[in-house]
Image (cartoon, rainbow, N blue to C red; front, side):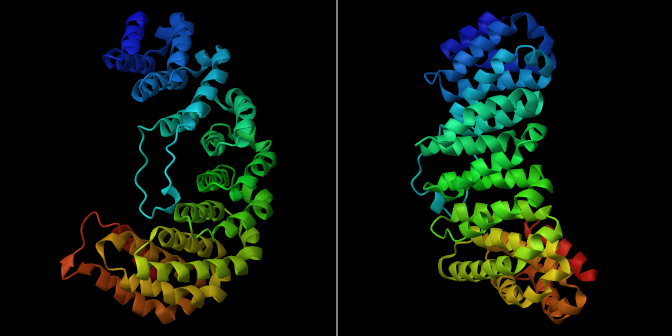
Length: 395
């Protein structure tokens, strides 16, 4: 049976037998045990061979990962294959298009799962989750540092993304050396290439989620200054937006006592960025960073609670302006996020402070629920935000 599958792969003719083999691996993985060595050696050769079409390499990779998920103990006993699996996934993660304007784009398309880098990153995540950090982390530790030191930005990018991808599955193994891993990542927040800076934010944000609240307690003084500084990267909106998203990850599970010393400077930075990006929206209709900054402000207010009160008036006028004027269809998500932000700030500061704006905001909510006298579309992204906002106003 395996010989027939190998012949189909080599000929790149009919992927039906290979897809059937993937299904077999998922449902009856032990059936493959007698020929596992032959299968793994063949699979690794195909994955490494760039002469094969990407879809064939990815399908063979899917077969390998499916076996790891369905029968992890079987693979652990064949641990000689784990290192080459990790190496091949990392190599595939460097297969990136060198798009000159990537970091300047304001409209971000959905991730294309057909790209080698995306498929390999997902595979590494699944490998770590299925086999565990004890089996996978030593190979990450060995393979990633040379990638981070590479002169090729694609290798530095892939090394950082590998840390993100393996964090969940290698949680216990990474936690023991969390400070060392964070310190290895931090220099790349100032990397010369914007996509490497993006990947650094991704790694820090992922670790903030996976290792909370330990990450926040131990790493705040090392991580926050760099992220806050990177918010000034106006030339690269995708990096700027991802930086703000990493701050959301950091503050969502952040103990309040860790946040408070940073709150004045952080709010000043958030206010100036909000004002700048609101003006940018009016002048150029660019909204990517503004949407994310508003979510970041909401998260900070939610964590700070009543300590956000002194900064209330710094934000509310701009937020009300966006809520009232973001009427175009393509701005619905922006207005929805703004409604959420306003409601979370209202909950944070309490009704005494929020009361002065509550009536105006409720009137705007009522007005927003109709468009030229017609009901909102069922798929309008504002709907869920409005429901939460009404709930918050009722409290």
